[in-house]
Image 1 (cartoon, rainbow, N blue to C red):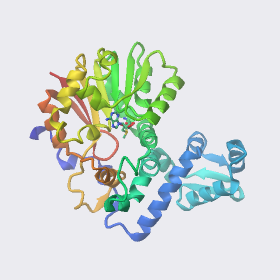
Image 2 (cartoon, rainbow, N blue to C red):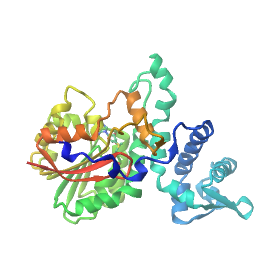
Image 3 (spheres, rainbow, N blue to C red):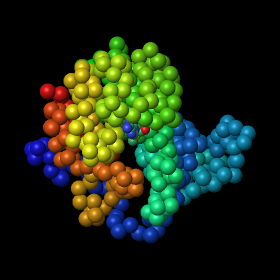
Image 4 (cartoon, protein in one colour):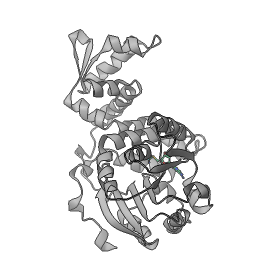
Length: 354
Ligand SMILES: C[S@@+](CC[C@H](N)C(=O)[O-])C[C@H]1O[C@@H](n2cnc3c(N)ncnc32)[C@H](O)[C@@H]1O
C-alpha cells in the first residue's frame, strides 16, 4: 500500500491554502458575512448574469426579476458585494461590474452553495447539537438539494475538464453515478458520448427531483434515468438489481465517506459494491479525504475546515487516502490512475476490478 501514497510535497499548492491560521477576528467575522453575500447573489441569479455579461444593469435586473422583488434589498446586497471587492458600482450606482476577484468568487460559488445553502442550520445549531437539545437528521437538517447543487456548480466550474480527460481513456456503454446529486455529471458525460446510457442514483428526494429536470433539459430522457435510492440498499439489500445489471462502469463523486460511515459494514463496502454491479469492470471513484496534519497547519485552504466540521457534527467519520487505498485493495479494486480532483484533499481514482 505504501507505494501508492502521495508524498506531501506533490500536493497541489492550493490544497495548503493562503488563509492564515490563527484566523484574525476581523477575517472570521467578515468571512462569515461575505459567505452569505456570495450565496445570496447565487440564489438571486446575479452570478449567472455576470458570468454571461460582466456589466449588470441593476434597475433592468430588478424589473426582469419580477414585481415582488425589492429594489432596495437587491441594491444593498450588491453594495455589500462591492465592499467585498467582487463588484464595482458605476453609473452612479446603477451598474454593477464584475471585478477579477469577483470572477474567482463566481467560479467557486459552489462552495458557498454547499456551506451557506446546505449546512448553515447545522453550523448555527452546533451548540444545540452539543447540549442534546437537537439531533442531526431529526430536529436539525442539512439542505440536501443545496449540497447537491453546490457540488454540481463546482463540477462545472473546475472539475469537469479533469473528469472528461480521465473518461476519455475509458470505453463505457452503461454508466451508473452513485450519489448523483442533481444528475448533472451523468447527463454531461452520457450526453457527450453518443450511444451510451446512464443511471443516477441518489438518496435525496429533492436532489432526484432536480435530477429529473437536469435530464429533461439536456434532452436525455431516453438515455439517462435518475432513481431515488439509498446506495447502501443497492449494496447490502439488492435493491434495483434489474436496472443496474447492465452497468459496465460505476462512478461516484463525494459520496464514499457517507457509505463508509458505519464501521460494521465499512470493510465489506467495496466488495458488496462489486457484487451489486456484476458487469462493472471499471470504477471511477472520487472523494475528499482527511487532511494530513490539519491542526498543525499555518494556512487554511478553502472548504476543508467546513467539510471536516460538518461531518464531525453529523457523526460521519472521514478517512485518510491510505485507508481508502487499503479498502480498495481488499476488494480487488486496483488503481490504474490517481489524480488530484479540484477541491483540496480530493482524489479521483480509476480502479479496475480484477
Ligand atoms: C456531496 S453530494 C455530491 C453530489 C454529486 N456526486 C456531485 O459530486 O456533484 C453527495 C450526494 O450523495 C447523496 N447521498 C448521500 N448518502 C447517500 C446514499 N446512502 N445513497 C445515495 N445517495 C446518497 C446526497 O443526497 C448528495 O446528493
